[in-house]
Every structure is written in structure tokens, then in C-alpha cells.
Image (cartoon, rainbow, N blue to C red; front, top):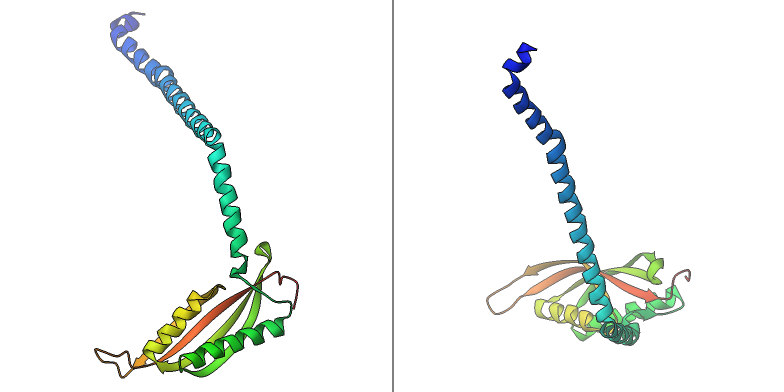
Length: 187
């Protein structure tokens, strides 16, 4: 008992430190956590209120987007037959190539890929073209400007006889993708 009296001040100090460590600090941490959760819920409520206030404007934008998407249905090709589709696209490419006075080294079709979630089929074609550099780039620009989307997956160009005023001759290897809508499950 006398030892307790002798170290009473030290023991009291240790007891206060233990109380702070195991009672008061966890209480403050719990309060901070509760305040953070309340703040997150308030932010969520504010966002929901903002959406509800702007509901009419959101519906107007939705209608405008639906109209824009309806206008863009012609972005993808439509064809029932795979053979017909590939023939049409190959003839279209050959006409563009002739228009820009280019020479075709190779046109080859790769296996198609089905994108069922979008009701699309991707058709891949590899194309090797030779000609004047300026004409090749005009050809590629026209491919990209077409109303139907033609994706360029790979592009490799080699130049010969360049100078300050002329791109010279070029050889290009293109990997193109044509998307056919409504073709999922059709061959």
C-alpha cells in the first residue's frame, strides 16, 4: 500500500494516458468517421437534388441525343451477305485507289469479328498501296471523310525520293476495319 502511495502520481499519470489511448482517441476517431460519412451523404443528397432540379434539361438533352443517334444510323454499312459486302467494299476501295492513281500491291480480307453487344460485325482488310506520297495521303483522307465509318487499325508508310517540296514515292500498308450493322449471326 505504501508503494502505491509513493508512486500515486506516476500511476495516475499512466492511468490518464491509458484512458486517453483506449477511450478518448477511439472516441475522436469514431466521431471523425461519422462526420465523414455524414459529409459524403450530404454530397450525395446535393447531387440527387441537382439532378432532380435539372430533370427537364436532362430529358431535353436525352431527346436531342436520340435524334442525333437516329441520324447516324448510316455510319455503319448494311448488307445481308458477307460475299456481297466484301465485293462491294473491295470495288469501292479499288475505285478510290484508281481515283488517286495508286497501284495496289495486295488486298486481303481477314476473318471477321462479331460484336454482338452492338449488333455489329467487324470486317478487316489489309491493303498495300504504292504511289505518290501526296496522293496516298489524299486517299487516306477520303477514306476517313466517307459517311460510313472506316477504321484504320494500322498504318505503315515508307518514303523514297523525298525532297523539300515533294513527299516522293511512298508504299503504304493499311489495316482497315469496315463495320456492318445487323449482320450478327448472318454470313
